[in-house]
Length: 315
Image (cartoon, rainbow, N blue to C red; front, side, top):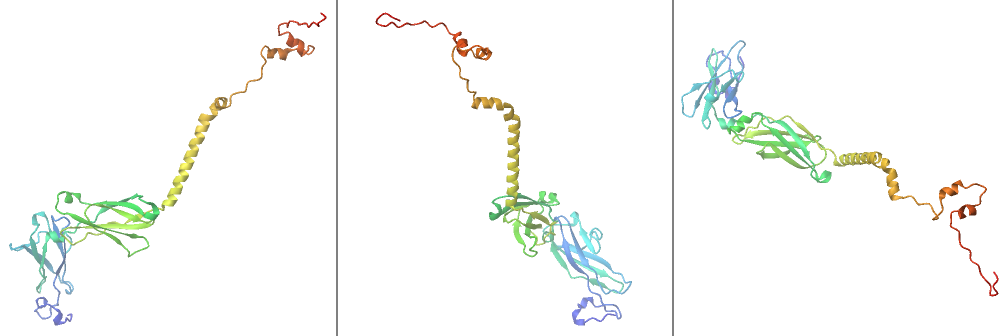
């Protein structure tokens, strides 16, 4: 048999029969309600049982001053558990319970464990954590990020059984223990302001406003905030290329086919010098043997001759 310090053993757990192994009492260590409609309690079994020795467990409970009852379901919550469905769950009433381990030699009863269902609500972890960038002021002023998530059992919130409070934590990738915290969020979304370009890890959890038990953390979300300067250069390049392509298309399909008309509008042709009464075609067809004077004189009417007389009457 195992040697045990008598001062460290509760008198109720000592086996009065000589030669019987000393066993600890079972212990109710955890009770949880996900929605304040039902709940489950788990216990640690007795230890130091001899090889082949079996223990049978019975959980008994009472509500306020009502008669004592036995656990309604030993299987739904798994090994060493008791599940209370909706018909066995009452809100704003105290449950007091004990677990008894029954062995062939003696029984071992746990300490009494009392609870209010509203105080053991531990909700499910939030899901669908997402983000969207809202560029507020650039790299110097920081960026704005809108984070949102959902609760996996929205009908619980819709019926009003519980009211959730959220806590969101975020940190840079390289700062493992430097979590920034947003406390007491009543809505499933929050906007983070002034974030510098970097990679961040974000997670969220929740609890009922009547309970101190937090849910597990949601799946971590990676938030990458790009450098706005690099993004701005890409945007400028895209704009320049786009404007250049449009300009080339306008020139190719609009200006070139109308180039002659545009030239005639802005640079009208200069008229050739022309003497009234002279036919340009006649100048082109003149025979080489004729003089220019004779050809031109034929186009004009005869000019009357004038004579000058001297005082003596001579021509």
